[in-house]
Image 1 (cartoon, rainbow, N blue to C red):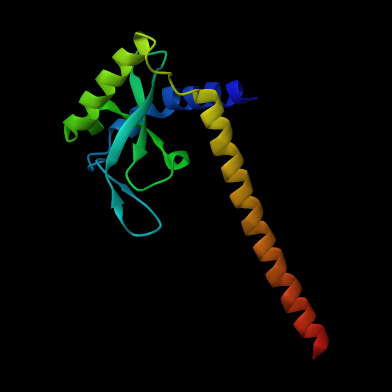
Image 2 (cartoon, rainbow, N blue to C red):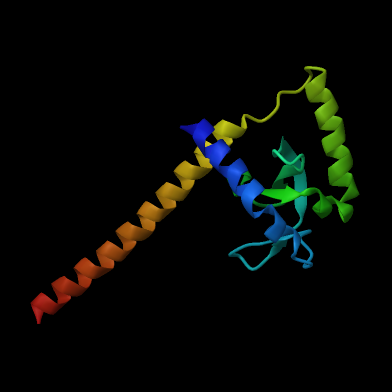
Length: 139
């Protein structure tokens, strides 16, 4: 199942990549629900899609790893230290000194998190509805 998730995401990137490149807005930070901008902390994985373009899984500062996102290489024009650290990490992985991220397991964990969050929202809405029904029955 996890490999299907990875494959589907890669297909999505290939299909919609031209649209993603049209955005001139700076992508050098991630805006989250807390209202803060989070700069990239490090690159944790890299994939190459069929057309040869590369995407990088970015861990954002002060954000959980499961909130990481796939970004194009242009993000690192403004973050040379992050890029340089990734090049060192890739070399260590090539030499067997460091283990690469299991992208399929990562995607599965992200999917599980999204499902759990969706279930929590659904449960919260259901509880509100039950409360409203019960309060209307009491009157």
